[in-house]
Image 1 (cartoon, rainbow, N blue to C red):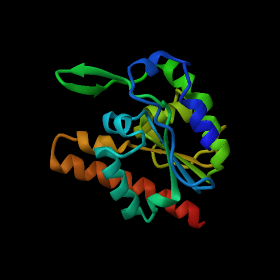
Image 2: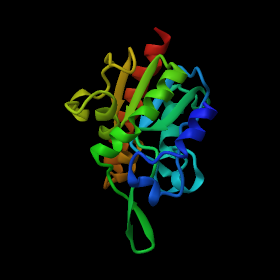
Image 3: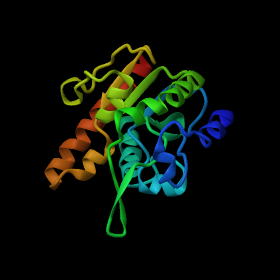
Image 4: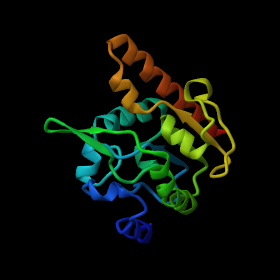
Length: 193
């Protein structure tokens, strides 16, 4: 995995490397039973060089614990390895990656999945799901369903933890969080069975 990570730091497959602080490659045990794929690193991830260490990572940590999936037992990565952002005052605000940028990172994602060989791939959010499952995938209509894909015999998609944070009111955040945990429990149960 170190060789892949080192090679990714030299990637020039798209222009995102020009404005990102660094490549944010996946982390977790080789041989993890579950591999999580997010969209891209956020501001904190870009600064720290680790996936899911910002506010969405804190939500994911809690959801994993509530679903019975220890974070130390999973592999975490993103479909896109550089942070795509736009300035807003002094802040760097997430900007959705283009299809060409997702495709440029696809070999890195495939290499990670091939190296880890997870039993289940979990896509967090629509961009990750469409990257792994296909562009026709509709997250809210198909979330929580185990599917066979070209990358894994068992793949499931759920909302991104940042969707919980973006909910405008406490009731919306609670409902979004429960949706995330419910889908992660499907993963936990699939591992048991």
